[in-house]
Image (tube, rainbow, N blue to C red):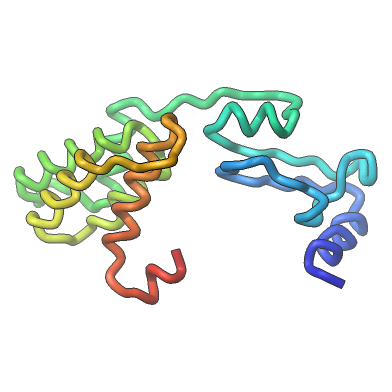
Length: 168
């Protein structure tokens, strides 16, 4: 018995199940994953989050709730917390951090990934990060998703070891 069959069997043993799939980038085949359809298990409900309207359309989502990006102030607050920017941080690094946070375009996953990868880094690494974000041109990526990819690529590149990169 493969993993999807075991998962489906486990779900069907419960009266009510809520499956949450976050950050979905393409249409999913729930049967292949092992998530029973509502016609096979009335108590199994699913919630997906995606930035792609096309994914919602392909998956015949019943209800769509539009979530906006963070405001500039919210972006900066989150960035500062994740990168540990404080009153003791140099003004140059603060200015670079502000510009880098602006490049994240209010996307929480990008803000957290980039800020965390720069936490405790030297000023020169902040400058390199800003230059890379500004000059990066993702290819074969949907236009609305390019900012996320640029930020995730930067956080990947800032990982300290090849082992950490292999886990990404």
